[in-house]
Length: 303
Image (cartoon, rainbow, N blue to C red):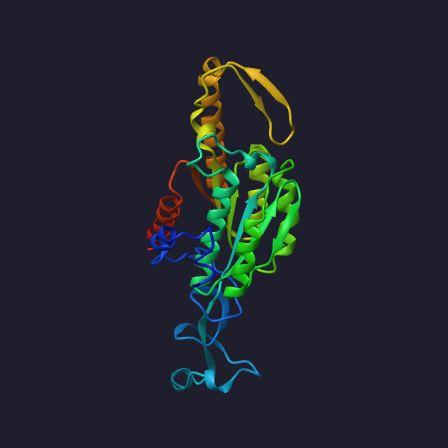
């Protein structure tokens, strides 16, 4: 049996739902190997780009002899190379991601996020791209750099199975420190509940975009956070700071939902303003549907 397919994070349903879909980068990406994504580098391939004047040291095989006959000047052909793409999952593992609902049929936020990261990594490997994984709270916990191959995929899946949520988050400084570890541009999936605050989240995203990465923000909340279904007097505890608050959820529900909607919209608009994709997800949504629909959206947009 294929080890990747047997991972608890890669169900047969999920794999079937994304089997025919490829990630397509909108930005030019740099690469070292022949694969499927456009690169700013020039070399040998089947796609002609343009001419430039011959310079000493150029390969004589690239000279366009027809251009020489028409212009009496030496020109070389330039072709667009194809490159593989770095596809990195940034997974928030701060304390707030550790929320687990009473409904045992639903995944907790961290488990749901781990499934997303696993599926993205599997898809990248399948199309000969280079998946990577970063886990973080207010600091970088794990950094597994992008690399090709099934062995590397197994390393990522093993790490995802061992994660636990703890600590506080501060996305801005964390992502600012992280960008210096990437040696080239790529596609980044940021999986987070955004509980470090709007300013910190958007500041971190802007740092990634400034380095010309393509960023997809997967804003992940538990269905309880989205719907606030609590009925009786409840003690709410902050999973990052430990602070507790006793309150009447029926009285607070309207205000809470208004503030949540405003916060979500501000994150969404902030992502749009800096050019990042945004997808809001709650854990009651089937994971395979969330991933399939988003990838279909990317493919349709690419056309």
